[in-house]
Image (cartoon, rainbow, N blue to C red):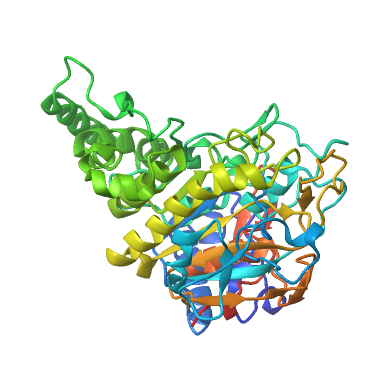
Length: 483
């Protein structure tokens, strides 16, 4: 069936807000596949033209998401409250940053020197459905949708083919890479809470062709790149002959069969050939090419070297890089987890914040010096913040006297690049960091902003496994972030 809605389906942003075309059979009513594709292109073009007048539209070519899974404390990192009571303000003193009027916690001295390059959103906020544990919050942050099945503990079921796609997968589908490079990389470990692994980190109903390249290795250790190297006994010339043969097979296919087969060939075989033969990806993952001084600046730890690898991947042409905080979301805070129920200040001071400080500050400085920040949106954020009051239970978890529980009602995210204001604060939390006082920002709006800066209408339709139309995200971009 072919359906083209009338005026009720259109908006000022073009046809992509509503269903534009549904095709049940090629050639129906004399409209062929080529005509359908042309109509779809016109719809996308219309949406783009309408959105180009909005601030920040199409400013980015790539996105970096430093996902601080586990929920870092906004009060103890980038929204200190020195005038609040002691059971709220905590143990850390404040530190003036390079950006006028912006103060950070004393445990972030290197980032304070780079705050003239970024904006802090101090009013990220949402109200969860039921208990707010990590998995549901991560799923929302990655996909732009709230989960439909949540266990009494707040955890979700394992990943399923009918999940909503990760935003990076949607971007890969809508803006395919023209370079022999992974378009979407997730590292150095999967999104995880307890035994629920990878939820929100797949292409879901888009299919595995749009899954990220899962690089689950510690970049601070020796990296193995066997899957990006020619196998022993197979020369580059032999691989090129195979590619030539593959192209001849394609040329001999009937037109319709070729259209169907190209999906698999383009997404799997040709990508594999190009990645292996070009060596572009292999070189990007080779941190040994970096001077020791640069590696030291980022920090010789998993997060720091992951941030350096992130810069190299963006430089090589990857469109979306997600660097997950190395630990499991509900891991041990005395090892490498932001989930500071049992202890908050010691782990932040001695372990986590020094790593975040070196890696994030070096990434901002390095990308700015190389000109990459002009066309790359950088985001550093967790799935929620931590409770303003110490020692209380807000999510059914037990907490030590100096521990902080989960807190989705107000927290902070850092954004930079792609036309975003430099040295600024957007939004404001109240006197205790408990709720937004100005300009609340839902995590879905941050995803909408990501699509917007890439020149993608956030309301573009994708069809799920049941052929039902779903918007990329049901939210508007935060236009006030742009200068």
